[in-house]
Image (cartoon, helix red, strand yellow):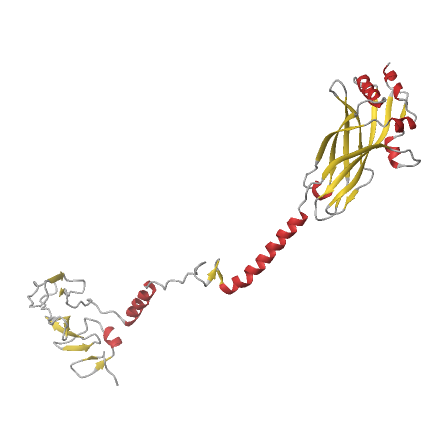
Length: 364
């Protein structure tokens, strides 16, 4: 049986450390003395001094070359001056304490290499709690931080394997989006004027119903249905459909004032194949001269002069607004404006029963 750390009494019996630590200090011992063996190289002796019990700590074979001797005690209420010790240390420190509540005196003499002992030994539970507390105060191991980029193991805070899988997929997606945007990104069509012709009257024609027949009515309004042919170039990689075009026309007269001569538009939606250059888009325009306009006489004289033999071309200005569903939902409605010169279609107008020479007489 291993009795290391057990306490032995003069009467021959031994007690365990737990029983010894729980033994009251003031237990009656008549002049006796016992020693307790400790694992740290100390023995604790308890003896009676003047009817009172006290204790000292004695170091065995101390590494600093000296032993700590027991203190001498007198009365519980008094204290003695510290005794001299021959110690190899460079300096001594002495601490004295007066009698505490149980009537004992304690003096500890320690140097730079001396041993230090608590006045009251700790119980096993207290020592266990201190050990646990010291473990809790120990600094935890530092967490290994993930390094990002440049060390060959991680890429943008992802593992190398994840990068090898994710980056090619991301590159394919971005390339697909880029190619798609390149082909479907809307490009504004290019519109140029081609020619103007007079619309033929046909029974039941929706255009004729819209524009009316060429005539001079009693209210002094001259109406001539025209078709403005525009050439449209589609630069897009997908087919486009122009759903409507609204056109406002003006006649430039000799006074440099723009005289409004009517409006027009598409009869049906106009479809264009992808990447085509020759798309004839007909705009049905109702050319109208009204005597209610203050500049009617000047405009009528301009038409008569242009429609006479060897007369100059008519100068026609138009503003067209194109409606495309592909981009109109974005609020984009391209506007085209241009000024065109064309020869007066005298024969076509007279075939409709309109006498050009009568235009100026309407102003009277």
